Every structure is written in structure tokens, then in C-alpha cells.
Length: 102
Image (cartoon, rainbow, N blue to C red; front, side, top):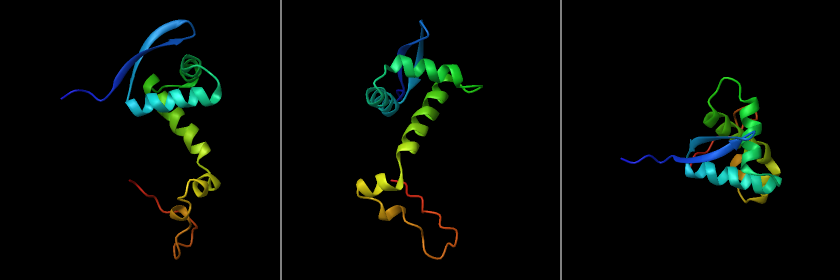
């Protein structure tokens, strides 16, 4: 069985290193870099500098998740056409939204 992870080289503050991520994570990281007008290397250097005890790959995944969670506002869900799925559930009393996995 082959691995679904892709190994790529990145430059962290002038030093080349490699990291293995899922293809979707590489796509997301590339999209974030494009949206922010930065290079993947710049974002990787920033993540590496503040990742703490986690691995570099884990730090990148958390950064990607955090980026998209910050962008996933209620208004954004409505504009994307799935806002009703995340409305509060009647009878829960805590106003929490259901979690949907697809």
C-alpha cells in the first residue's frame, strides 16, 4: 500500500527541510499563500517559529485548520448555501449547532 502523504521541500529561514502532508493540505497551504500574497516558504517559516512542542507537519495542519475556521463564519456558510444546516437545533437549550460530517 502506498502512502497518501506527499513529501516536499520547504525553506525555513534560509534552511531547506522536507515535510510530508496530505495532497489536500498542500492544496490548502498553496491557496492560503496565494490569498495572503505570501510564499508557502514564508508561511512555513512563521509556523515553524511558533509551533511549540508539536511536529512541523502537525503545526502546519493546525495553521491550515485555524485559517479556515477563522474564515468559516455564519455569514460565510449562508453565502455558500449551507447556512441552514448549521442553525441552532431546537430543544438543545444551549444554542449549539449540529456537527455534520460528509
